[in-house]
Image 1 (cartoon, rainbow, N blue to C red):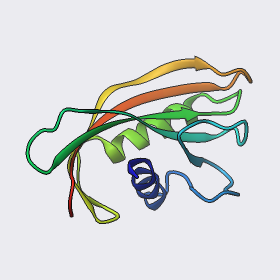
Image 2 (image 1 turned 135 degrees about the horizontal axis):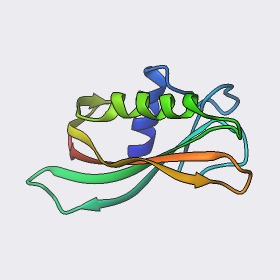
Image 3 (image 1 turned 120 degrees about the horizontal axis):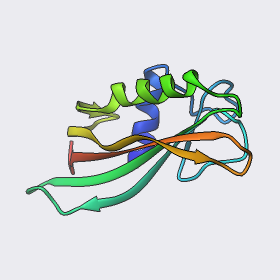
Length: 131
């Protein structure tokens, strides 16, 4: 799945961890969870029309949530994730990507029900259907 490939890549870059009991920045898929406070959520949000034979163009959103006192650390984490993904080209867990590009963001999304700030960014990909 796209979000697992992106999560694995961000983990390999040292930006968070997909481990269920991770401390620090946790990477989760599909939705945010109440804990931990510092969370990176990856959600697949759609797909554009095919860009050619054998190509697929899914889009995904990354939400970066900090603790209630998060400030520059939250912004730095969001920008580090963007730097790792924007204009990426290559293989992730065996699947080839012609490109990953930021489409929108980073945008301050507001605060969740627990008063934790969130920043979002949306990315588009051009992915080869086969490796």
